[in-house]
Image (cartoon, rainbow, N blue to C red; front, side, top):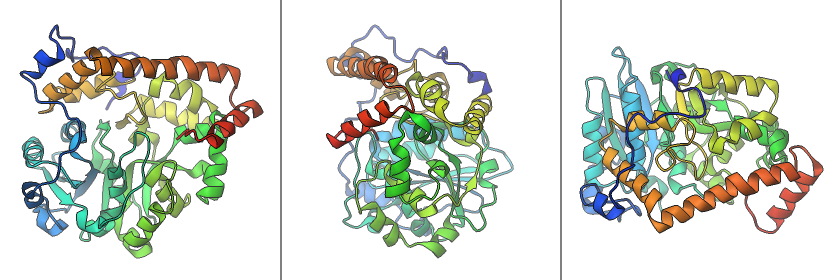
Length: 403
């Protein structure tokens, strides 16, 4: 459990980057930084399974699915470490990584990390399922986020599976979530406290988007898709991958595949407690400015989740714990990172973000927007006011994005 991490400030359990070395000196004995995903090669193709039958995993108990590219491998490793440290000896856990470009070296490193009596890992190629489709995305989102939509077809011999984003850490036994009954439903998920807070005042335009463009009957039923228990059998009975991808490519949805899933499900899902997908206090604004606008039941559940976190989800742009160790619950991330084979690379990334001109410029920009402009906007245009709605609509008409 993660209840010991309650509070806005945490003391990091290790020195995560306050070296006296320059980034160049540090890079001399650390792994090179990841600038972009590598080009796929024949060795990657040889190590990627083309079907779940080739994974050499039992897939008989708890199945966990990730979808990542090479760039996100260090953060995936931290998430995997957190899963391993919270497993039950009485259960078996198979981790499946959906990807197109993870390198053989990374696959070998992750395989060694996840090697254990009750944990296995495999890597599944999504190329054939995607074909030549272009997946629309924007902002901090990446095309890999759509891969979860392919899980029902890529895993035809699996009845249900937990899907996890890679920007999180697990603090409880995932078997408890896996055992939730999803009979007759496509999935189980948590209500999205952030989106509901926006609906209820922080950004009222979200309600009309969910109702009129997504077609949701009740926008307050919107769920957060970073942690899902997917009933893969029910998906296969209900909707084909081609039908899902057709919705994906209709337009660039505000929250991408999360919107697509909410459009398809339309509120008919099994609710699980927010402790299984606790959205950390992004920029220290989410709790006091966004979720604070929501109804009592949402605020109370969100507060209760923080006291008993099973999954801490670092959702949101420009406030990731691997670059901002003073962000909410960053100490929890670095606790698991300490035991990841990518610790040195994570330290070097942090060092670069603190010391290089580009890193410092990015930090100044983020501080200016989230510590300067946004608080000023909140004071000038309070939540739920007509003035706020008018300003947001004008901003969007001028081409701005609030997604």
